[in-house]
Length: 201
Image (cartoon, rainbow, N blue to C red; front, side, top):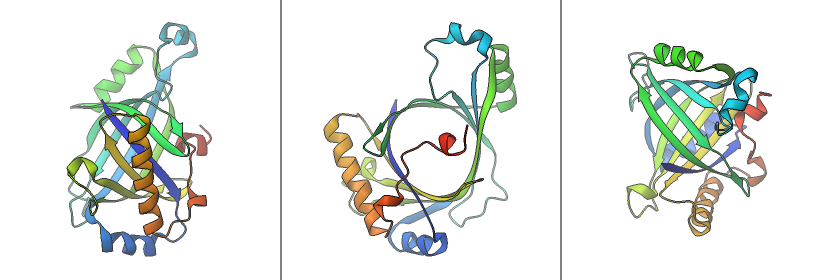
């Protein structure tokens, strides 16, 4: 199980921020992610008492190459469920994820199991890896400049950790906020609400 420790913030000037990121991080490509969140129907909700509050996320994703070309990319379908938590404006998520070979068939299975698609999110953007202060690959920070449909631009900074102890989360929080400062993003631009909340879903 991966532990995602993440901060996201609103972005007012995406082009200038993109240039600042390019100067300090390694560009890894562009992406297009369409997320659908599945939940039990009201009639079956009582039978799914342990169902994750985040729902089952079906992500149809295209990732471009390091030159930023997404035209010839192959669509991948990733299935995710999470235990989500916000600690002092930082997201700490316990994530389970796997890939399926046929997204349409998997969605048929969800329907048979009594789940329905309730929430939707579409984001496109650019991704980098920042590892200037990393001791090893696990200490690198993933950076994504995201255009979220109906909302606007955000910067997402994420560390994958092996645990969520207070010390681990505190250290990750310091590193994420320091990088946010380096990028010139004011801390009052941090958004602690989930995207689905912001989208009114």
